[in-house]
Image 1: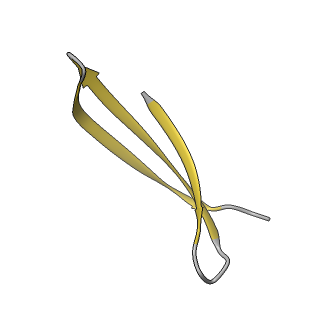
Image 2: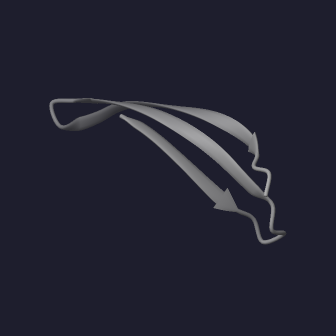
Length: 41
């Protein structure tokens, strides 16, 4: 499963990350996080 999300700090800066999760037998067995960079406004 891929998950792409964006978040904003209290300073107003926005960032984007991606996670790749492996699910087997209905259970989460692994998650890899790829930290992205700052998002341009």
